[in-house]
Length: 135
Image: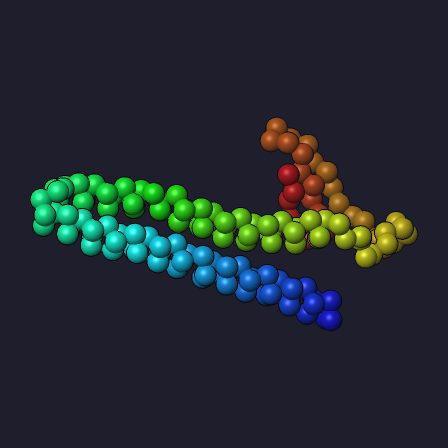
């Protein structure tokens, strides 16, 4: 039980760190994106009032900023998914690396072996003690 608690605590710690990184990185990217759009609207509105650029140019740059930050947002999502997958892979490899606890020496013999084998067109059926068929 102690070993399970240790493994569970490590897994919980890794998950909390993953959530912490995601909860810090994603809002920072959103804040930078919103700041860039805010500055663009502020500068673009003042330039549009002076008739230096049109509203269409401002809208184009807003879309460009969104297109610029979309891969960064997706990268944050992929990084979060990658961290979860890495954690799962680590647990799977650790499970595969564990040695078998039960030693099988092959000395256990069943007391009664009873059954019938029947061959027919559909394949072979093995009638077991319980009466069920196995293909």
